[in-house]
Image (cartoon, rainbow, N blue to C red; front, side):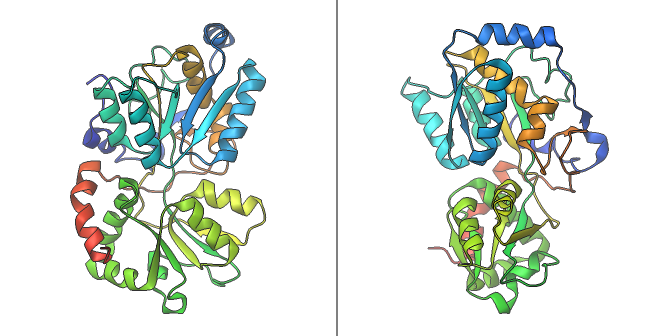
Length: 333
């Protein structure tokens, strides 16, 4: 297919992630190549980015983009499920708004490619040298977000050592967990936890924890002291709260999924050059240092980023098939 990925094939290509040999050195685009892209973007009247990434991070990326190229890009931030629904609805109705989309759902992007909503972006100097598990020609992995267990340091005095801390009876009723009905991405984490610890772990977790709709409101509760822990957390959200002085911390345990964030240019955009230039910028050293500050970049040697932990991908089809069983084990009606 034109996207060079199926749900299973695309995720399977990440199986070796976590090993240093899978990372490629970041490449700086030449001034001439960047100038050619910027020239095409001028006159398009700005752009629109749909993204699942934490708003302050996107604001920083777009501010740097404007400083470098003099181009304004607005953004809409939603979770992967709602963002995909909005992008699909707009394209189905013939009124697309987004020029570039950043989303964590590989299955959705596979369907979007088949329906012609996203397509090959053409030559991009910062991306073209990358391996195909990072850049397919249509879809780029712009960030990794392996899951973490996050906690309020005023409540949890000793740092957890594994996912099993979620079952600590000392925190009964103070644990938040992601509602697996809201996104297939959360189901992938439950799938790995189930394989590692068994069905009874999820049954016990259901008695211990309360469901949360997504990571942002859950972490706001943890930061405020209304909950002791949350899983699966996302580093960029935890780090943002921590930077603002919230009493939160996190730890990364095995197993964890890669939690990729993908980017693709909308096929029906009226501003293709702006979208291509922004995607190119996001995959330069400068862009990656902003997107993945204190996080996990798909590129090597990006200042201020962390080494990738070992991660285990879960195919979308497998998670979809397993979702009803996971919901049942968690006792969700």
